[in-house]
Amino acid sequence: MAIATPEVYNEMLDRAKAGKFAYPAINVTSSQTLHAALRGFAEAESDGIIQISTGGAEFLGGQHSKDMVTGAVALAEFAHIVAKKYDITVALHTDHCPKDKLDGYVRPLLAVSEERVARGENPLFQSHMWDGSAETLADNLSIAQELLERARAAKIILEVEITPTGGEEDGVSHEINDSLYTTVDDAIRTAEALGLGEKGRYLLAASFGNVHGVYKPGNVVLRPELLKDLNEGVGAKYGKTAPFDFVFHGGSGSTAEEIATALDNGVVKMNIDTDTQYAFTRPVAAHMFQNYDGVLKVDGEVGNKKTYDPRTWGKLAEASMAARVTEACSHLRSTGTKIK
Image (cartoon, rainbow, N blue to C red; front, side, top):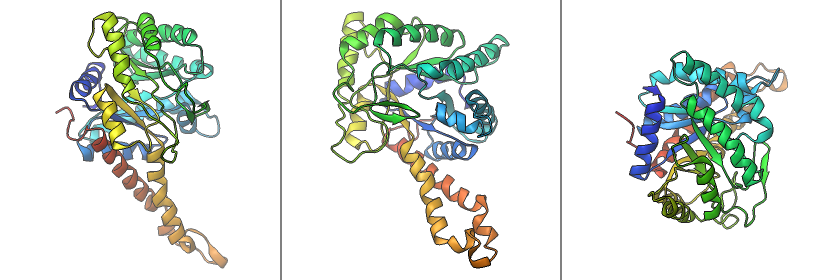
């Protein structure tokens, strides 16, 4: 299957929700980190989600022009080719996009998929994220309505973040304080504006104390049981059981118990970036320290080509990141759940 069709992506999310597991959503910034993510999913026999943030897309676009759309399209097209060699199914997603970057990222990418669908093809990406958490909820949902309509027409699922996630990611930052908890009223207003599927499917990044980055124990207070309150509050009003498909942001460093509670309460996607970045870089650092006189031309020597060859340390980085992705699948209960 390789890259999921719109129908298969919907099936993946339905299976996760029914089975109380979630897909790791792995941020990638290169062809090598893409392969690491695909390898990790394959070794866990888990389907998954590959995502590209605005900063990741800018990096992929090259430092000469730093064009986000070029970078995202190029890696997505590459993924459509190489993913066929892995016996799993993945969806392609774009991560956090704030208001000031919509015209330079999500809207042009929607246009690319609209053109593909008009030709009878599948969309390039299977989902896009609108991060309106820095806006008022009214403005956030107004923009979400416009994006959801376009996404639905292009057979794409929209992800919305309605209240802040703490910390910083790609220039979007929020303080770590009591505002990091979505209320039932916030969730009801979201359902009123976006519907519960009839206007197009969307994933909901609700806040339950989530923080981007890594913090020492005790600095962040997660309340994943809050998700149950949101589902029950909206479900009671609309007569639907568990109406939302939740996304877990800022999950790096979370405890096994916190993750399990989130899964039990409707999380179907969990973003993982900080931990996989470290997993990728750690063996590279070790290689450089252990082989400094080979990777450097010290005291007029010529070094050792076999140690500074990027393939040498790149293979170590890929294997380490793939192992972290496989570990994430275990934490999120997706191991062995791939679509046959």
